[in-house]
Image (tube, helix red, strand yellow):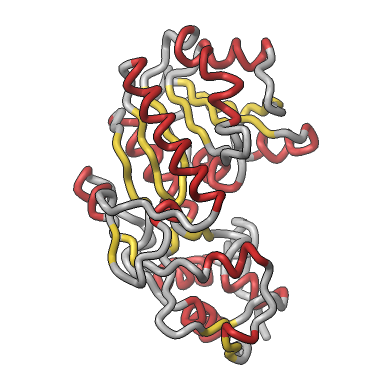
Length: 300
């Protein structure tokens, strides 16, 4: 994709994985609120820019040259921060723009009582943050129609990868096995988010896509599997009713669904990590589960 220029609003965990997978030598710029994170972005292959909710001249200049725009900023009470700040610029001052990718969440589906959902299923958001996501998705799709450019909505399940997984949680003592009968979650490795973004961007494909693994599973099973790989005793099971959880964490357990991923597979994408076992085994064997840097597996 030489000659193409990517701009990422919200260059966080998933965006850094996207940049690290840049073997096309495309130019990648990305924003953060905090200048102290600039060096980390540069290390990931992202030219850093500051975005604090207002569009600076520097950001405007970068957007004017952008061919592919990725948005990974959550909406707030005032709406979508990127559209609020840069909507008119996207409409009128991005002559090179070919494609937009918006990172959303499977939380937009809400609770379906453990049933399977796909991109045609009703959105029944439970939390306020997911309700705002539904509105933001619609705004981005509408913008795409206005400017005649494809917009891909990537609905992501629970994100994990180096530094964010059951192996590292076991090592640092934060892993818990909460048990709520019948509860399952889908997951997605950050490298598959990156892979899906590159795939959709290269083909300039727009639509709504569930970017999630093949196997919704009880969260306690993931911790137990990681413990088996590490050769350690898993933490005891904790009944959900007695667990001490933050309101946000508890809200996740108020939504139960199995998320299907056939749409992006039908488009031609193949997942590197189709389930948590494959991912944990690979990270453990390669020793990159802590922070992405290969090391010898932990000995205990």
